[in-house]
Amino acid sequence: MVPALARMAVIIKADHDTNIITGNYEMAYICGLFHHLTGTAPASFEGPEDMQGRTLALMENYVCRDGREENLLRMLKLYKPEKTFDDQVGQMFHMGLSEKRLWQR
Image (cartoon, rainbow, N blue to C red; front, side, top):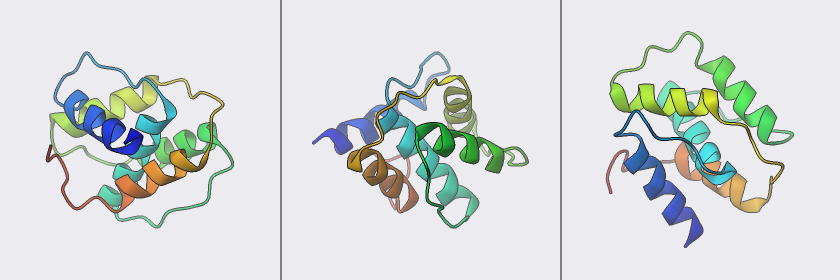
């Protein structure tokens, strides 16, 4: 249930430029999406800060294709990760990485 809610929250938030990420599950899903969109192989991460930092480094030369991607990148840059790095964080990353219904509610 939690993964589905976090996924839906990210999809809805991507439509608005005033939203923020509210937890590591949303952050991990966005990181997975960006790895999916750039076609990069996933790496193992040492923690949430590492996941965010490596994803932001990956996105340095990426040109966002639309406002949704720009909103997600802005939210990721502004987010301060929590210490939580449990199995569901990894599950959310892999959910974004393997997303086949991108932007579908």
